[in-house]
Amino acid sequence: MPNLSKVRLAGYGALLAAGLVAPFVAYPIFLMHALCFALFACAFNLLLGYTGLLSFGHAAFFGTAAYVTGHVVKTMAVPPGLGVLAGTAAATAVGFVFGSLVIRRQGIYFAMITLALAQLMYFFFLQTSFTGGEDGIQGIPRGHFLWMVNLADDRKLYYVVLATFLFGFVVIHRTIHSPFGQVLKAIRENEPRAVSLGYDVNKYKLLAFVISAGLSGLAGAMYAIVFTFVTLTSSDWHTSGEVVLMTLLGGLGTVFGPIVGAFAVVTLQTQLADKVGSLVTVIMGAMFIGCVLLFRRGIVGEAVGLYNRVLGRRPY
Amino acid sequence: MDSDYILEARNLAKEFKGFIAVSNVSLKVRRGTIHALIGPNGAGKTTLFNMLTKFLAPTSGTIHFKGRDITGEKPAQVARRGIVRSFQISAVFPHLTVLENVRVGLQRKLGTSFQFWRSENSLQELNGQALELLDDVGLASQANVVAVELSYGRKRALEIATTLALDPELLLLDEPTQGMGHEDVEKVRDLIRKVAAHRTVLMVEHNMRVVSHLSDTITVLQRGSVIAEGRYEEVAANPQVMEAYMGTAAHV
Image 1: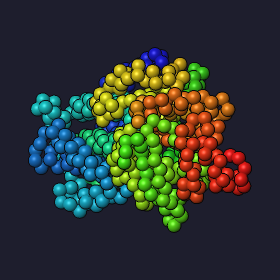
Image 2: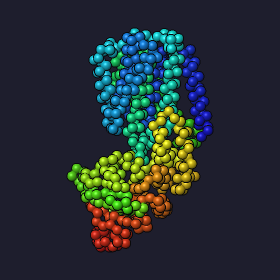
Image 3: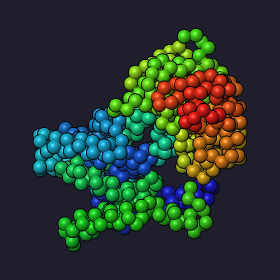
Image 4: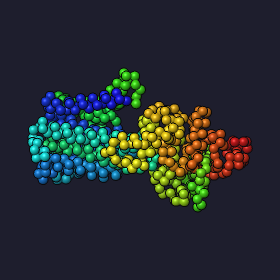
C-alpha cells in the first residue's frame, strides 16, 4: 500500500504546516485550548479505539495533572516545564492505581467503575485545601520555558504547546505501531484467543491504561499553564463525557479522528457559547446522537471509507 | 504419574448453580497420541475442555500436566507451559492480516511485547518463520489478506497455524471441523494428522469419520460422566455408547 502511506505522509506534512502558521491566522488561546483537548482525545482513543476499553472517568487524570501543575508552579515557584512533568507524573500514578483496580472488569462495569473513581477524585478536589475548592487555583504564572522562552507571549507558548502535543501524538502513534500495540490490537480483536496464546491480557491493558492516563495528564497540565487557572470543571464528569464525544465524532480508532473531533467540539463550544448560552449542551447532545445514528465511524472514519469507495478499494 | 501420560485429570467436576455439567471425570492423555472426546450434545465436552485449559475453574478435582499440578494456574500461564487450545468459533484476529495473526503467536518469544517505544518493524524478523507456518497449512499465498476475508475453512487453518506458532506440546482442539463443508473437513483432518506427528492432540469432535480416522483413543462422555474409553472399534461396539447416541442399540 505505498499510495496510502504517501497520502498519510502528505497529510502529516500539511497538518504540521497548518500547525506552524495557525497562530498567525487564528486566536492562539483557542488553538491551544483545542490542542490540549486533541491530545486528551488521542490519549483516550488509545484506550477505547485500540484496546477496546471505554473509560468514563478520564477527566480524573486531566484534572489531577492540572491541579498538581497549577499548585507546584504557583506555590512552589517551580518552572512551568517541571510543573507539567510533575502533573503528568501524578496523573500517571493515579492512572496506575485506578487501572489496577478496574482492569479486571469489562464493558459497562469498566465504564461505571472508572466513572465512580473519577467522581471520588472530583470530591477530593472539592474538599481538599490545595485545590482551592470551589474557587480553584487562579493566577498560575506562566513563567519561562527553559529559562529562556517567555511564555507570557501567547504565540511563544503556542509553539511550546504544539511541540508538546506533537510529542504526545508521536508517543501514541509509536505505541499503536509497536510490538506492544500489536498485542493490544489482538486483545481488542479477540481477547480469549490472546489469552490462549499465553498473553496475560490484564497486564497489557494496564500498561495501555497507564500510558493513556499519563498523556491525558500531560494535556491537563498544559491546560493549566495555558489558561493560568484550574477549576473543578477539569475533573468534572462532563469533561470525561466530552472526550468520549470528541473521539467518537472524529472517528474512533483512527489516528487523526480525535484531533478533528477535538477541534470541532472546541470550535463549537467557543463559537456558540456567547450566542446560544446553555443550549450548547443540547446541541452537543444532538450531535452525539446524530453521530451514533448516522455516521458511526466518525468524520475521519467516514472520510476514509468514502475515499476507499471512490478508489474502488474494499474496506481494510 | 508415569511419563507416558502428558495430561491427567483426576475426578474433575463442574457445577453451575446446582446444575452438574461435569461430574467426577478422570482422563489420561497419552503422550504422542490423538485423543478424541466425543458425546452427545450437553454431555459436558466443552465444559471439560474449558477446565483443562483453565478457562473455567473446576468445582473439584485436579489437573496435572507433565506431572505438575496446574489446577490453580491461570489460562495464559497454562498456555505458556505448552497447552494451547483452539475454540469452537474460529478464533482469529479478524482485522489483522493473516501474517500478523501468526506473528501474534510468535512475538511473545521475542520478549518485546511490552515495549511500546519500539517500532513494529522489529517484528519483521518473524516473517520468515510465520510464512513457513502458513505454508504448512497452505495459506502462504494469502499472507497479506485480512483474516476476516478468509473462508471458514481457511480461518480454521489460520487458527491452527497461529496455535502452532507457540510450538505447543499439547494441542487442544474444540470441534475443529464444526460447520465445515465436506472438502474443508478433509483438509483440516489431514492438517491435524500432519501437526500431530510431533505432538499430542486432544480434541472434541462430532464428525465420526474424522474421529475414526484420526484418533488413537476415544473417550465418550454422557451427562457429565465418562461412559466408555478405548479404540474406535471398542467404543463403537459398546452398547452404552450406542444407547447414548441412538437411543437404541444401533451402530454408531
